[in-house]
Amino acid sequence: MKTKLFTLLVALFAFAWGAQANEITSLRMTINCDGEVFTVDFPASGWPEKIIEGRTTSIKIMKVEAETDVPMSYVGFCATMYSTSDGWQHNDDEWRWIDLVNQGDGLWTLDMGEGAELVESKWLNENKTKTFEFFVQAGDSDGNTYYYANGINEYGYRNNYKVTFSTGEGGGGGGSDWKVKFYKESTASLNLLVNGEAQTYVFDGDATRLPGMQQPGDAYSLVIDGFHVMFIHNDNVKVNDVSIQYKVYEEGQEGGWNRIDAMNYYAEDIYNPEKERMDHRMTCYAYGLGREVSAGLEYGKNYVLEVIYQVVTADGDYIFLGKDKEGSRFKFYFDNETGIKVHPQSESGVGAYNLAGQRVGKDYKGIVISKGKKELRK
Image (cartoon, rainbow, N blue to C red):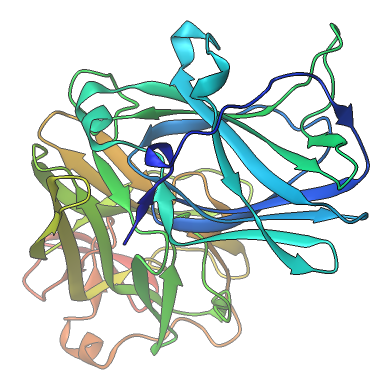
């Protein structure tokens, strides 16, 4: 059962200054923010106040770890939450105290299992901006008190660690409102045919190619043959269309964008009782495209195929995966030794392409690329 940090028992905290000492040597926290789990080490000074961009729907503290280099009778994690616009205006009894467990050898931990949720569900509708402020306090058997915080300010008072975040799920907050989110893990793929052989590139939610994915290299034929992308969106958001945008250009130059729409959509509703709302998960894909992107290129040059995923909502919002990301660029050398090889159907006229790189039939009229050469069909 998840534990609400701010429903834990309150212990009055004496905010008197104690030693900002080396007796507490480290603080580490494992945090789950909107499904992404990461670990943060907090130095004893110089840690910048963290402002989480965009809209946050969930922050869970999974684990707190502190280390001491002398024996301590207790080590506690102290925290408070307040509206950012109001600043810190608290009484001492508004701080929450949680004891850490002595694991021996100077290690003190607090394992919160599935996580202590900091974001209250009512804030999601109210679009609140909150600051979470915290530090560590310890005491030895002689009654000495020690603190581990973010150094001392110019007035001689302790600086605590602060994380500021905005909650909400869209509607009334402007373009930064959360409406569509890509998954943090495997969320998209691109199927290429390189010289007739299939290569699949898998991306995570930051448009990073997963390990083992190589660049196309030398190519006499490069074909976009399929793609898929997964994302979730809010209950009140309608998705108008999903596509990939791509362009091919000589390395160091620029090129114009082309578009391929998703042909199939699979939607699934996900009810999340913790947040008291409905998510909509969509998987969009298109396969068997046969879009030749090397048609009309010059032999013996280095080229780049750049691909981004685009989601457009009914409100006119454009959400991209891979925009301006290095992982979305595929570099290849257009081979002039083997010459461009056509697909088997090309001898019957099917393996020809218009200037947009689209495969055309033998009855197509206009300029086409066939067998690596331009020709005019009348």
